[in-house]
Image (cartoon, rainbow, N blue to C red; front, side, top):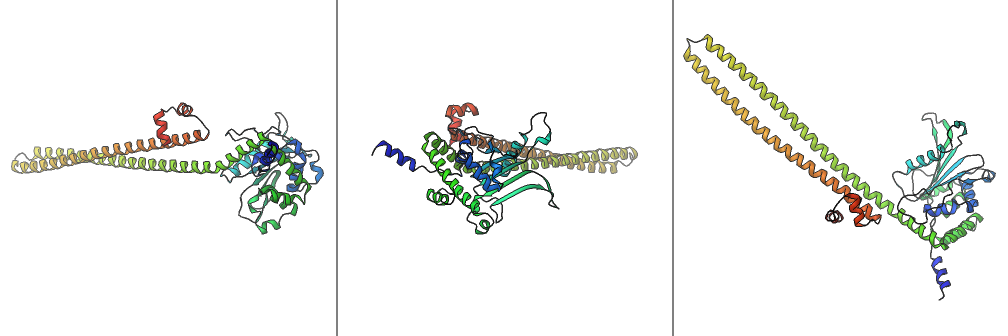
Length: 393
């Protein structure tokens, strides 16, 4: 078999998924494919087609050739004929921070319009469109649009903020599909599908989808772009497991912190009890002194009653012995409390050492995932080779 045939077979086996943001931006966020972007926005927003005649992509920088582990901005920012700004992003994974990310990207695009010294009147409406490969809201809606409204009356504060969410995970929900146009559902199924035959079948009804297939074929024919796509796809697949791992680490650290706080509270309670016991001892000592003063006074007044005085002295000596016994018991309790305090402090130190070890173990795993060498890891974490081996275990 010739080399040409082998290359053709190899390229045929390559399949892009538009749910990977690298591929999505490569198809819809390139000035060379501006017609595909127009079709995407027209289908989602429903604006008149002439609104997209003079559309410009604002972030035209090329996606990274090879993904290096740092998360790049792979959204699409465009400006319409009327000055409105559009931010479009594909989200494959359902991460806890996604809704906050929607707001951050919207605010970034909105605020960058205003140049220093220019009036606020120059600000134009900014629309955020987020295609989600999962279900976000508990509803029978695929396409949701959010604004800032008053809680009770529902009146809109401003139309400058508009956030769209398109939940691709609901494309199998018949009730949700009924609420959208056929063209919208066809496009979303095309974007969501990883099956080449299904995409071809969907494209029969829409010329623009045939153009998208041609663009995807061009990308798969480019080895450099293909390997960059694979790198990004692997990162997104690993992203979920990384978040799960760090969530477990965070939960464990929080648990250890709770245990430390509980131990510290117990120490404070014991210290408070010690202070209370010391106060009681002082009070008893003061009472003894008072009793001794009374005894001396009695001795001065009743010299002639020596027998009675001796009897009283005997009683006083007995009371003093009891006080001394109590003092010895209190000293013993103080010693025991100091021992418990030392044990608690030792346990706190052990827990803190475990926390530090868990944090370093987590950092070692991250650095290993980033292909750092042992020497780089030891230098970054200021640890010995023996410590690194222990953290890897």
